[in-house]
Image (cartoon, rainbow, N blue to C red; front, side, top):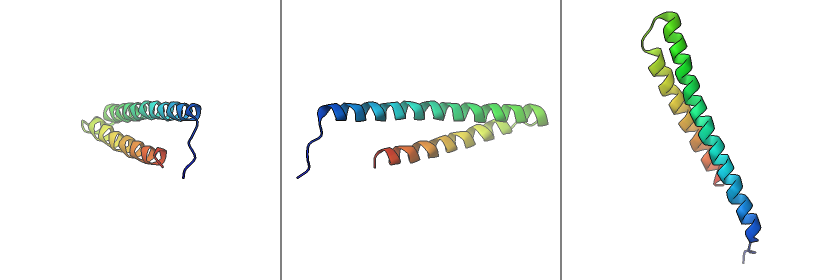
Length: 76
């Protein structure tokens, strides 16, 4: 049989997981914003019109990959 955990420890685990999820949301938003900003800068520097969209989509894919990886590690 498995020993039962104390309720206080469970509360700390939920708070810790909640804090990590909040941090992941901020990380995801910042990654997408910086990808968009980089794309805008490249568009203005080289007078292109596709870099903003390309870098934003790459940043979204990178942020999703990082989020999925961190969530799977959190659930282990």
